[in-house]
Length: 88
Image (tube, rainbow, N blue to C red; front, side, top):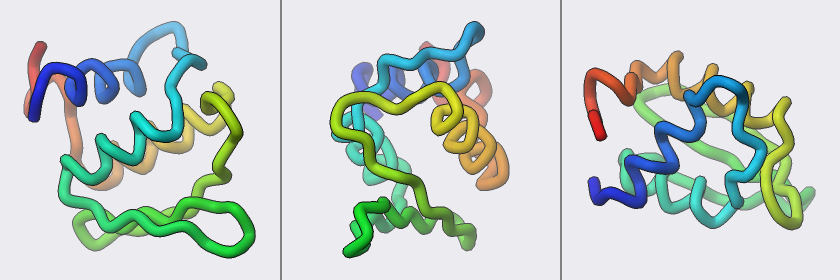
């Protein structure tokens, strides 16, 4: 995982919540983690990672804080820990 992907991963787990994460950055991060990412006809992003799956709305620019929290919880459910697995 390169530095840019690590930076985005740590942004999802940052305190206070970072609301400046763009959709394309998140898609690239999910791909780097080994997830299958697809888009539905209703404008949602379907992510399947390590036996877990979730759907997230796709905003035009960056994710709102509520979506960042949902993605953070999804990554935690999948067992992703940025400090342990991908330190800066």
